[in-house]
Image (cartoon, rainbow, N blue to C red; front, side, top):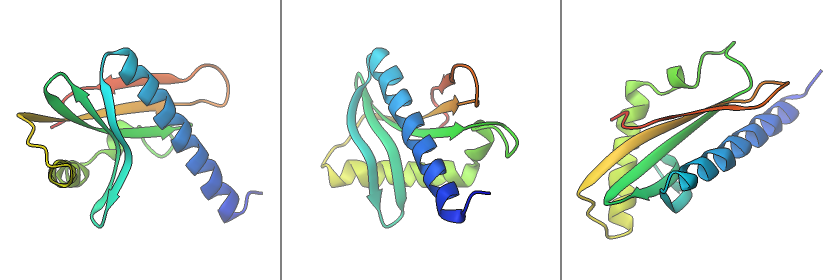
Length: 125
């Protein structure tokens, strides 16, 4: 039986794995990483990137299975609203005024056996 701290540690490790995988994928697509795990009092942005002239805020959701829902289902309208506000806060903190802001999702499914599955959804909002 896993203790609460072991469960939290394994979730944290799974999340960190997904973020590394997402970052590699996005960089291979030509995006440039500007920030990782940026935090303020309102929340956290997993990855902040530049795609040409577009500022991209990327939410990374990693799951080992879909028993608690797919990664896509975890990004609700409330979460999207928060990500929009966080994008504004990040841009303001870095004195940037991007012409366009896009919110992306990278959904990573890491089964116990076999390769991980990654899906990049552009422009959730």
